[in-house]
Length: 135
Image (cartoon, rainbow, N blue to C red; front, side, top):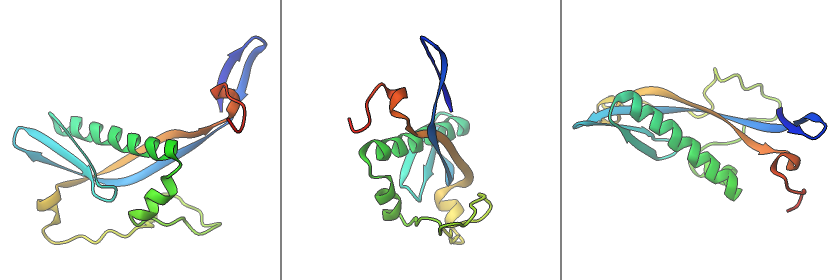
């Protein structure tokens, strides 16, 4: 819920949040650090390891926001191998719905793993956006 101040006090507006948990990799490349999310083929860089990881989280967030804005998130995720969780299946984050096969030389090739997790509003009620439904 998001609070919005109006003439008559504070009104609550409903929103839907999306949380994304993916695997990122990071490695040093010369004087810079490169970070990527191989599953989405999203890559970024930074001056330090922490900066590269932060930039990758931002890039993944922008990728998801762009897909939401264009109405293509479901198709884009299916294209890279994701499938909706079965109806009624509790998703706790502990299970891995997309298997990752590690190759013996993968760490040397891609870099060290780190979690990429973002949470963002995916949909907000029309009142919050100042628009009427269907506009």
